[in-house]
Picture 1: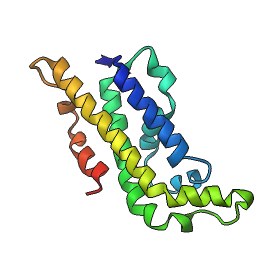
Picture 2: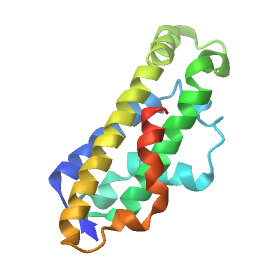
Picture 3: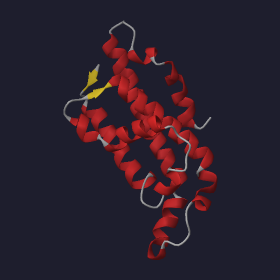
Length: 158
């Protein structure tokens, strides 16, 4: 099922902007790539956060968005466990005149990761409502993806 909802496009745009600016910026990206995520998870995360133009006009496929949300939730969970406690130690030393900017990125990473998780959660909840509405009494698409049961727990940090 394709989705061409303006609210979904705006949410995906906000997710991508926030991710690029506050999570995967030039200061933090080296630490992110140290996370033990499968390539397919990275690919799905990249599609959600960087490839909006591919979907803006043709629409999103609901099943693909669910997979991207699941990948994002797995990323959030792993980043909380492995990066938040020791992010500073995972980054290389001297950044010269950009030291203050790097320190700001490191100090705000935990809260920025939470904002990212909240945005992904909002997208997920919005998609569930659309999915159930479009199913019109039939079986919604999310029910065919059992792994989605993890999304809430992963995003909440439980």
